[in-house]
Length: 229
Image 1 (cartoon, rainbow, N blue to C red):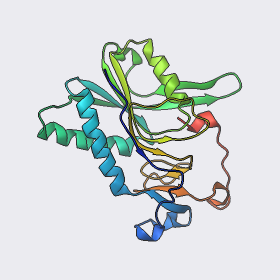
Image 2: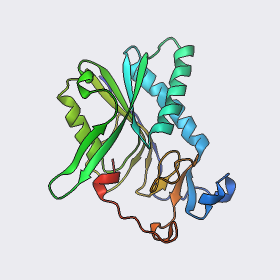
Image 3: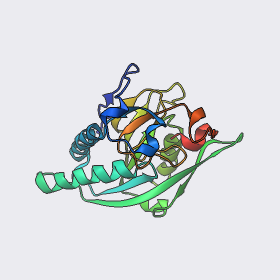
Image 4: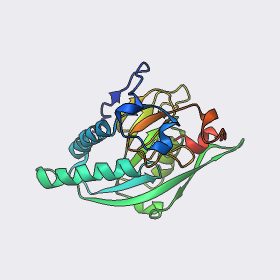
């Protein structure tokens, strides 16, 4: 029987750290408000998650699916820690990896409808142990819909690890099996999380300044189900 793991909860009152305390690329400095989760803390928490995943899933051959684009840094660092544990512990996880993207549609007829892009045909899930790795769960609509979709292929097990989970009134109540940090409802970027494809190359997770003043005042309007997973 698998259980949900504890997460590191960041309170609503947490203000983060002054940008001057860290090495921030100059081309991003004016667009960021604070460093919210430093890179070193991300790595420490990711190492702990690797131990929890090994404890819960060790002994099974796992097909690990990275959800692109935002999940690639978390996925790569987590796999490095799992590989190190495989080499240095009595229990190990044989893993194969693949990469997918989730495309969701926003219209009046369907909310949270998704299309899986890339990876093997979903029929290959039958009878296998799968784990998904994501950057952030916001409302949870897309992930919940995806898991419902996967049930028809009868996988042996499906588990989800997410670096971040937001506390938001828009949440449908979904919570992944492995969580790095539970964070307030703030717009965060960095460590592969982006705003309009910017900030993926930022090491730290940072709070972005008001979207109205970013990038020469250009305002990008997002539909909830298009970018929230």
